Image 1 (cartoon, rainbow, N blue to C red):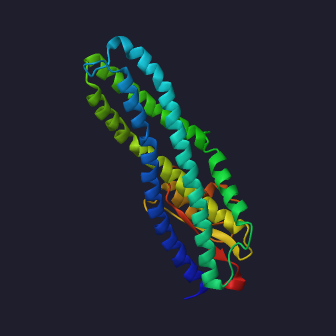
Image 2: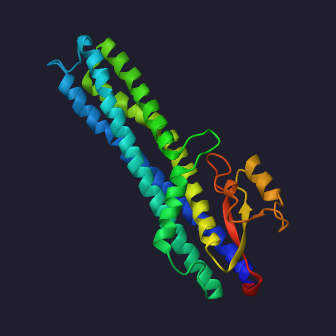
Image 3: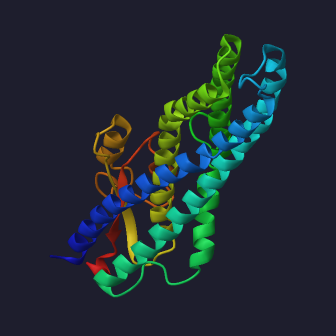
Length: 266
């Protein structure tokens, strides 16, 4: 098996391993954002009357208090995503360098690893997607959506005279119903960080000449189109590290990149 074939097999395995890491990160983000339920429980306890309900006369004041809850949601989401991007950058850089060195005896990048990882995180967090949003905007939108759903549930429950215990159970249902949005965010941003880290390492490497895009399992049209494109005359699906459209081909994308080695190392 040639060095190139060995590296292709390793990158395929790394993609699977990163999928498991991303699944753990999804669970982490759901737990972190779910911490707001404790704050809501305390808030409802403060507003509850002796019979365990919240009187209708206090409804508007309670709903105004949700401004602070939305701020907490945004804070938990931001912290979680920062940790996920940082972990993904470090994880990817370490494994790529160990893998390349294991195959050809030379690391892909020889120095400046901490700076490289910071650059990866900053790029992913600040990049604008086709919708004109950056990561902080997406976290803001997620927290706003959850706050609106919580407002609807609390308003309806209070007007029906439901107990605080019932409202807490319904708040949990809101969080459970919104978890798909959290998962989608983590998949999109985590995989964008993985591909960005792969590209940034290649950009600073002297042993890599290009990156080959491997379309995601679902064969989404944007991935398939890129995998069939010969942009630089290097072959179908082969790109240069500065081709930023391969960092995040589409939302929820799970495509991955492999390295094309310089001919000296084949």
